[in-house]
Image (cartoon, rainbow, N blue to C red; front, side, top):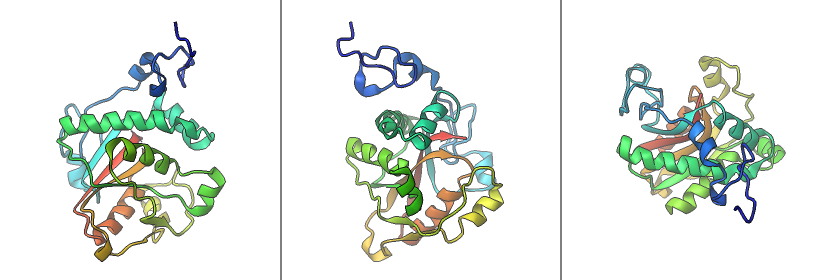
Length: 228
């Protein structure tokens, strides 16, 4: 008997471990798959690099993802991001935390020295009420005992939504959209993780990664909820 009557946030079925947020059935529907540890593309087996990222190498070094942007993961992300259901952060962060742990085994991932959430433009964050990447980063920071540096990278220019744009248009849309709030002399971290929700072409992450290289960052990891 579930005395407190906790419910799965997806199917509303009984939930025996409240902190998980998802029942075992719904969690099993979120399929993991072998992927390239650099660009995140699906592979037949886990590998640190693949032909795709060797042709067009991302500006970051490693990637960790939960799964594809399909149901039920896509539904949870949409509720979290667009339906003001900020309280889903713990459930999604837990799934990403488990993916990070798996990547330590499958891709020999070393934990970063700090976490940086991908920022929102201040007006967009004000209108939404929160930055979903920062909510995820705060949970991960606490569980992994790693600093969450949510004031290092600033989005200083409003950009149109990236949805529907080509890769070339995405890059142009993000030109000069970000800045750094620190200098190379005051930034001590050499291995960091960028946290984002859905990774598509990676244009945003590429722009931020280029800035972080100027701070002397040697390894940039990308942690994302889903690969679209």
